[in-house]
Image (cartoon, rainbow, N blue to C red; front, side):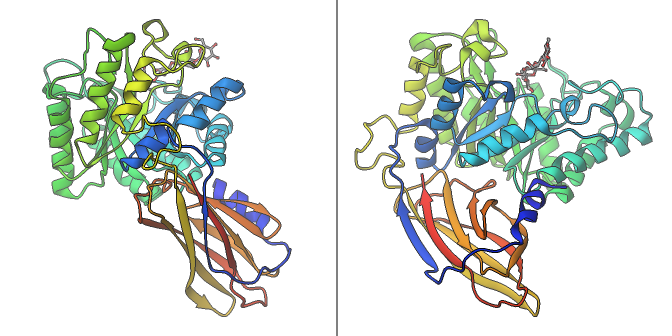
Length: 447
Ligand code: G3I
């Protein structure tokens, strides 16, 4: 059962009926200059990989909550973590991250559905037909659980070999199902959650080279044949052996020109001081120069928990101090001013919420609430809707609800980031149970 349905099952019972105001606006008191709010000023998200096991650490959670507008579970959504034995799904750790993110108004990237690594041992011995069935069941199980809650999914990860050949990597999927497994995974994923952006994700594809050419040709082929792909993820793990390529922007742009979004998905750059800061600046500037580069994710909050901790590749040191690389990223995002300066992203964040009934029948109706950002870009919003006492909500889409009596507080599922004046909406189906009255939309707050 999906999280949304699980939460909405609490909707049925009573409370008060608030009359009226269908539009409300409010201002966030939150100050501006964080990575997430600065990126929102550029119409982008700024995310980080998160490990569920660190969420209980006060400084980790505080840094995460303050700075980032998107999270990617670092390991918790992988196949070995979510389906350790066939058909038996476990979402405890991933749910913890998703719940935390949603409670803070952050969006969630899904990582990853089909990958040769971190596969549980039962997968590799399967024969071709069984493997195909298992792959599709895994996609459906994972995407179904988080339906409507993930802005982008890494559907297939790292399917191409390194080196000059441009060939597919040997894996159970490649070896038994052939090239078509990638296309099949994307088609299954589209049906499982039509609202999620579907990405192919890989490393050492950040510049123009044989491997990125092979991915490029695959994406071009998918677009020409209508295979559903929306985005390409560039992991961007850099160090002295694999520096930020000089043609990084050019490479992002050529993929964008195929008609897909591009995202920087696992950014880290080994080093320190001004040299590391300068490399981070190059990456942020490359993304900002490509209009279809929709967001950046660093692969961890603090150096001490990085998979490459010895290379100190992240924006916060082990004591959560901001490094020169942090200042460089914030500055490149246009967010380095003092909080309260006019024009700083987030200072005047505001939104309005407007309700309309979009369908009506004797026993129920569909409602839609449109959220519109005010004069400044926003990275998240929260709207409250009070339902007449008799009514109950059976489903809700494009938003994440929490309940107190019959007051529904809705935060974004994937649609938190809005440019100034831009709109998004969430919808819901309600049972009238004898009351045809309209729900009341209360405050809309933004950050
Ligand atoms: O949780 C267990 C723990 O119980 C056990 O005691 C310990 C012993 O080794 O292992 C722990 O699991 C480790 C897990 O990270 C959680 O910390 C695994 O061994 C370790 O292999 C795993 O590494 C992850 C790696 O993917 C696995 O391939 C890294 O955290 C994660 O950052 C890394 O992320 C990948 C992306 O998914 C894909 N792109 C490359 C990127 C970096 O390798």
